Amino acid sequence: MPSIINRLPDFAREPIEKMSWNFRKTTASKRVKPDFIIIGAQKAGTTSLFYYLSQHPHLKPSFKKEVHYFDGGLNPDVETFKKGDLWYRAHFHLKGPGSNHKAFEASPSYIFNPNVPERISEYVPGVKLIALLRDPVERALSQYFHEKRLGFEYLPLMEAVINEEKRLNSVLEIKDYKSEAYIHYTYKKRGLYKEQLERYLKYFPSSHILTLKSNDLFKKPQATLAKVFDFLGVDSDLKIKDIRPRKVAGNKTEVDSIVRNYLKDYFKSHNEDLYDLIGEDFGW
Image (cartoon, rainbow, N blue to C red; front, side, top):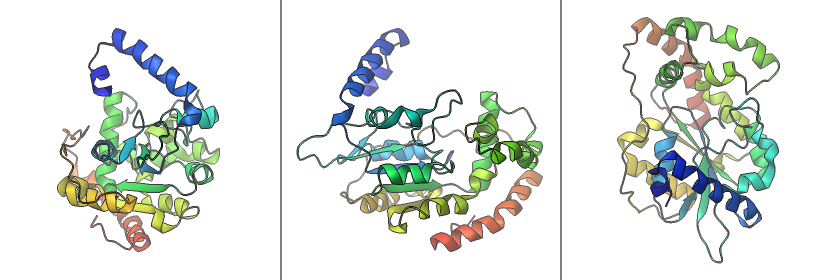
């Protein structure tokens, strides 16, 4: 049904979506909380992973991929976390007798926002978490060109990555995680995966966090998905039929080797620290 609605023109789709949302809100108390959450990272393939997992008969996705509840949302004028439990649960399916569906959502900024781990642990302490991580050099470049396309970034690439700390200093001092700078100009900081995972390990056992390499998802999708299904406790022998990558935008602009070398040098020690933490070398 959602795919049919999405093919409708805006004037026909909007009233249907509004009615659907109103129904979900009025029945929110009868809806489930998530069993697992894809927490990130941004530009690492979370849309593809969300789509693949949605095809498993025992997994039930949220009505939209990125709910952005625990991070407060990306709109600086709207604090979604204050909308509360029923607003969040309206995004999931109704409880059913004997249902063995596991509910999930995927908001890739969750791994990056320092407020999120504690909020999730208080709301669903037994939840499982999936962190899909991409080579931080490639992730940073992908984000830069994404921000450029959207019109948020106006600096040349090298200038943007070198001046990141200067742009972030003031917002980090006041912990403004919904500021434009924190959302749009964090090319290097979003790739510091060790510190992000450590924030979660303060609240969750390591057995509840699955860390995946995004390149594995695209190069060997069925094997990677089997690992996810095993982690979630559902049929791991099931083969997903449609494993086409979703929303994968290639960087069509040539990147100067000076920029790549700068980023590789920057992330080298951070990557080694990550490997020590997770016990696996991702080869970045």
